[in-house]
Image (cartoon, rainbow, N blue to C red; front, side):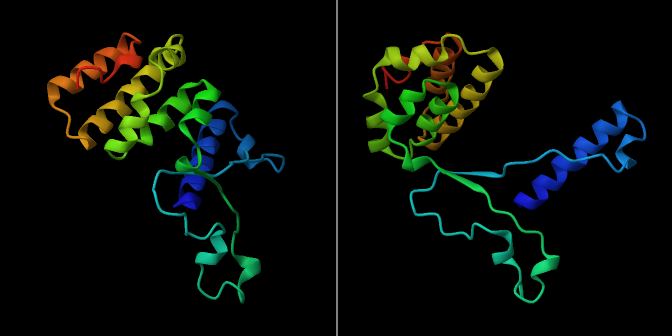
Length: 170
């Protein structure tokens, strides 16, 4: 799948480049941008998939020089403690914190984070980032079987940047 995503990104880059610079794509000096493939893993089990594309190809030893090969960077969410994620003090870390909530024990650990630390992260966040956090919260509420009314209350707290008290009444 990563190879498919990369090819789609390069195809779109080429399309946009051609619109902007007519005919330059056919120039020998045209180059595609590098892509750092990243896999974000939230599972609780260890990651076991091969890290190289060639390991997924039948008879790869025989056809090695004809097989594109790359590795990817694995971000295993459960390798990061809540404390470590809070040190980063950014929205991506907050999303990772929320994505770590898979059960009641995870939620309990999240609720022990001082509310002002969570609020500090989102205080200056642009609205587009808040929209992403809202989607994460809605998915999390669905996973935790939170009622529609309580989900709406959670979303309201995110929108007003009062996330530190997200589940205070639940």
